[in-house]
Amino acid sequence: MILTLAYATGLHRAELLNLTLKHTDPPRNIIRVIKGKGNKSREVPASAVLIQQLREYYKYYRPKTYLFEGYKPGMPYSATSIEKIGKGAAVKAGIKKVIVPSHKQHI
Image (cartoon, rainbow, N blue to C red):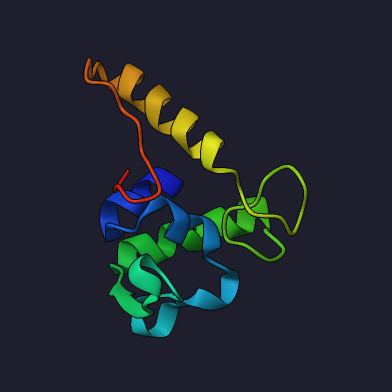
């Protein structure tokens, strides 16, 4: 889900990690980024399909605070784990290019 959200919205790794449940606005198909790149807040459009996928993700994982949580409930997912997910997806897709998402690059 985290790679899908990154691809669909163009959010940066740090922005994804800081998303909380309150940052989604399903009726308006919006995701709010609070203090994102450049310490600026903005609203990012999300398709109805993406919002539905987020609902299904929430129903399955039941995060407490952050949208993407690590093994400790209420704590954000780690940047290293996102990097591993990205690299694993690249291998599965047969991408030979080195994939190294940084806090300033899109995943």
